[in-house]
Image (cartoon, rainbow, N blue to C red; front, side, top):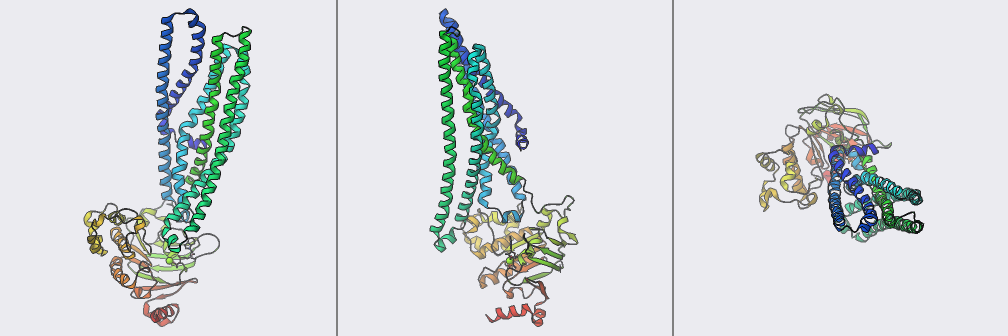
Length: 571
Ligand code: ADP
Ligand code: MG
C-alpha cells in the first residue's frame, strides 16, 4: 500500500525535492542558533569587540530571513505538492467510478461516494505533503541536535537522551489510537452525507407524508454519533498534546538541574550551558513534529485505505480484451437460453429464448415484477447474463466494445433523469457535438417546439435539479428529443408513457411512433391500447415467455393476454 502511495509522487519529483531540501536547510539553520548563542556568550561578550558583535547580529538577521523564506517555500510549494497529488487521486477516482457497473451503484450510497471524493482525499493531500517531510526532518533534527549536544558536553547529552525511548513509545501508542478514531470519524462523515443526500433528495416525499419529525430523529442519531466520535478523537489529541508538553518541560528542568551542577563543578561554561539548554529544546522539538505526523498519518491513511478499496473495485461489466468495435448495429437480436438473477439464489429470468428481427417492433406485457425491465437491461449489458447469451447481428454482446454497443441502443424510461442545467444541455446529452440545426430538428420532432417558444429563455431555461421544473410529459419529450439526436438503431421504451395521463400519453405516442420508425424497438407497456399495432406481442410472466404473437392471435388464443385485455377493456 505504501508503494502505491509513493507512486503518486512520481510526476512531482521536482516539487518534492524543492520542498524537502528547503525543509532540511531550515532545520539545519534552526540548529545553528544555539551554537551561535553559545559562541556569543563565551567568545564575543568577554572580548567587547563591538564591530564583531554587530557583524554577528547581522549574520543572525540574515539567517533568520533566509529561514523565513524557506518556511514560505515549505508551506506554499509543499502544500502545492499535496494538492496536486490530491487532485490526481480525485480525477482517477472519478474516472474509476464512471466505469463501475449498475450492480455497484445498486449497492452504494451516493453520500458515501461523495465523502470519498471530498473529505478523504483532502486528508490524503495533507498527509502527502507533511508525511515524508515531517518525519524525516524530525529524525534529522533529533540526530543533529544530539550530535551538537555531544560536542558541548557528552555526559549531559547522554543523560538527556534517556527521554528518547519514552518519546517513541508515546508516538506509537497515540498513533494506534488515532488511526482507530479517524477511521470511525470518516465512516461517520460518509454516513452523514448519505443521510443528507437521502433526506434532501426525498424532501418532497418527507413533507408530503409529514414525516419531518422522523427524519429529524434519524439525522440526530447520526449527528450525535458523529459528536461522540469527534470528542473521543479530541480527547486522544488532548492527552497527547499535554503529555508531550509536560515531557518537554521536564527535559528542560532536568537539563537545568544537571547543567547548574556541571557549571558549579566547572565542567561547563555559562555560554555552553545556555547553548545546551537551547539545543535540548530543539532536540525535543521533533516531539511536536512527530505529534503532527501522528495526527496526519492516521487520517491520511484511513482515507487512503478507503480510496484503494474503491479503486480496486472491479466493474462487473467491462470490455473483454478482444472486444470488437461495431460501427453501426443492424438490430437483429437473439436471446439464447438466457438466465439471470441480481445475486443470491433467486433467478429473475430463466431459460429465455427470443429472436427479434431488425426493424421489428415487439411489445412486452405482463405482471409487474415479472422481469421485463430486467430483460431489456441485459441488452446494453447493464448487467451480464448468468447463463446463456444475447447476440446482436450474430455477435455476442459481450464480444462488442461496451461503448459501441451502448451507442447503438437508446432507452426511454418512465422516470426521465434530467441533469440540473438548461434544457439545451439536457437535450444535447443525446449527442454532445450536435449542431444547432440538429438540435432544433430534434426539438421539433419531439414536439417540444411550442413549449420551448413559450419559455422566456427558450432552450436556455434551467430545468431544476432532476428536472423538477418540467411536467412529466415535458420531461418525456426531452427524453425523446435526446433519442432523435442519438439516433440509435435499437430502441427500448420501458413504460415510457405509463406515468402520464391518457391525453398526454396519446400525444406522446405519436412522437414515439415516429421515433421507432426504422429501428428495432422493444416496448414495455402497461396499457395495452398503446401496443395493439406492434409487430409482435410477447407475454412475460414469472414463468418466462408464455405467449407471443399478434394482437388478434393472442386474443383468439384466450390466454393471459386476452384476460389482461378483457380487464383493461372493461375498466
Ligand atoms: P418488471 O419490469 O417486469 O416490472 P423488473 O425487471 O423491474 O420487473 O423486476 C424483476 C424482479 O427483479 C423483481 O422481483 C425486482 O424486485 C427485481 N429487481 C429489479 N431490479 C433489481 C435490482 N437492481 N437489484 C435487485 N433486484 C432487482
Ligand atoms: Mg419494469
